Image (cartoon, rainbow, N blue to C red; front, side, top):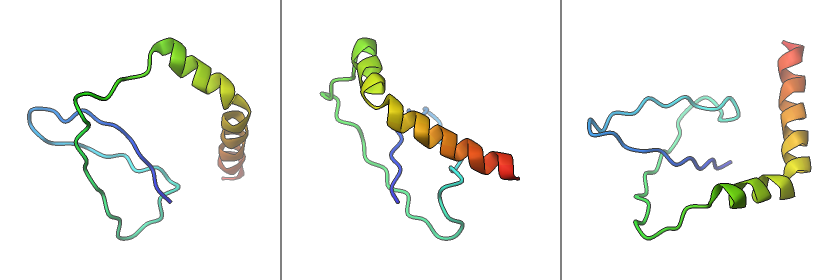
Length: 72
């Protein structure tokens, strides 16, 4: 399983990481890769289009997660 998240490194270089429950307990490798300065960010419209294209998958995943939370 691989999860990618972009974070902004503060001047203090200190981060607090909340690990998703999907990551199993135990040893984990965390890799840091500097983002390229030339990488173009998505516009809000492009981001919304991406969500629209994958809405069914995202909703199904959200419902799956919620079903586990209701069992506790």
